[in-house]
Amino acid sequence: MDSDDTAPDRPRAVLDRVSEGVLALNDDLVYTYANERAQSLLEIDCADIVGAYIWDLFPEAADSVVADRIETARETGQKVTYERYNEEHSQWFEAHIYPDENGLTVMFRDITGRKEREEQLRRLHDATRELVTAESTTAVAEQTSAAATEILDLEANGVHLYDKSAEALAPTAVSSKTQEMLGDPPWLDEGIAWEVYQSGEPRHYDDVREAEAVYNEDTELRSELFLPLGDHGVFILSSTTVDAFDEEDVRVAKLLANSATTVLSERAKEQQLRERDREVEQAETLFENAQDAFFVVDVDREHDEYRYERVNPAYKSLTGLSDDVIRGRTPCEVFGDDGDKIKSRYADCIEQRRPISYVEQLDVPEPDSYWDSRIAPVIVDDEVVQIVGATRNVTEQKAYESQLEQQRDGLELLNEIVRHDIRNDLQVVASYAELLATRVDEDDREYVERILNNAETAVELTRSARDLSGTMLQTDQSTEPTPLKQTLLTQIDDIRTSYADAVVRIDGEIPSVAVDADEMLSSMFRNVIKNAIQHNDKAVPEVTVAVDTSDEAVRVTVTDNGPGIPDAQKEVVFGKGEKGLKSEGTGIGLYLVNTLIEKYDGTIRVDDNEPEGTIVTITLPGV
Image 1 (cartoon, rainbow, N blue to C red):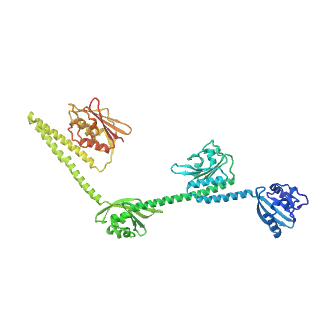
Image 2 (tube, rainbow, N blue to C red):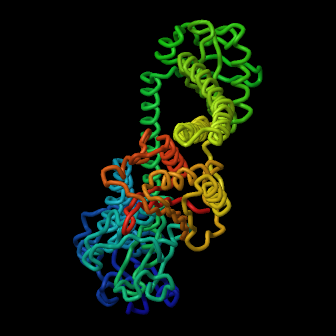
Image 3 (tube, rainbow, N blue to C red):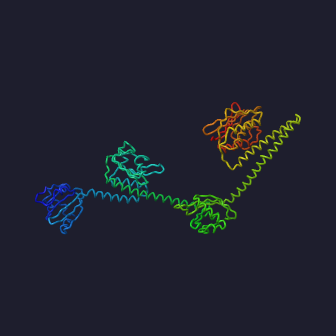
């Protein structure tokens, strides 16, 4: 310790308790006092300090900033402050020199930690500037991980970015230390990292094994710091040591995470802009090269005014109106009397705030031209600012549709004639033939029977033709739940009456179920059962009808004892005009059956019956 006659007026007990080193020098620059903290910082006992000349004790500082600052303090009588790096101790010191009438008092402290943090922050600032130059999100992640390793000395770390397609956090950049400990890190869609990403709140664990949401309870990692990167992902820093991160580690890690988040947000914005530019370029290419006529209309709701902003080359080609002619003009200025109805369409589109389609008649490019148009509103800040549209000339199509309509009307008239006039006349012929059969002798009876058979065939032809034309002329192709049992029983009863020489059986019960069909279902069953009788070469044709159901379908089988159908003909028997083997049918009944099967989204199959005959299986969707 110092002697009793040195600095006797100093409150030594107080000075020995302060955190700074305190040294006292007299006018000859000889040390007269050193507190305990000074001895500790200099690693020199008081006995070796007190009484020593300053430059004898510290010769390396004689020509340094220290000597200059001491001389300045002595000359000016003012406090002087300086910082100096001590190479011998690898430490930074901050010193304050206070001159007085007795000499100098020097108070100093170790600022090595502060200097290291300042250097760390400087390097972190440099790393942030480098982050700004990263061209992709992957590069940002890689530079963030490298900065944590090289600048913050947090060697085990990783950046996990959100992958939209996988709906998980992908390990985008992982330090070598982390890979050494964990191998290839997994994609994360649960656990702490996922919760941090969703909440946006950081988490710090002194021992992550104690966390409820730990991804792996047996992990060798102990301390972990999870920092959210906005909507982009999570920055994870790890250590195998418990309580490894102090407040300063957490603070600087958050600074790095904030910088990474800012840059990732910028890259996301740039990507959105690139995608928008690409979409605009694609839209412009489509606009310029489309075959349809495209147009853009500016909307002025305040003045209820619409003006054409631009049209594409196809618009001029189809209408004869170029962009130069139409730009800036209103519908009335361009289309004259037709402008009001065009304006009304635009008003409807704005009112409904959705795309609308319509066909309009205009005198462009020729009088009475028809145009199929589609327009849609462009909404910005909840206000319709423009209307975009496309139109095509459908004048020829309208003429063709008119021709088809006339043909349809003619077919409907023909169908009406077949249904009523011709069938009524044939029934009269059949009635007279039956009457005639009672009045002719046996030799002439075969001629009367021919008349009756041909009349019946013709009546059946008109019936099938009526059903087929009715099906083909239907504008409504929708189906609905149709009861199967009553439909099938009615047709079986009718056929039993019409073909008294045939036997038509029902195998089991017909369930009370519905199928997805329409009123033509009865015609389909009639033609299949009738065909089994007409194609039969037995003296007594026998037909068996059975029905079974499953969860999604209903199967109707029609089995006969006829000659069967050759394999080559099974695939085409339902084609147009096919009559089967020596058939007395009309050739259109089974074609009607196939047409209805397709409409009902069902199937029909032909198989051989054992020992003889044919099995026709109809499968229909149940409801």
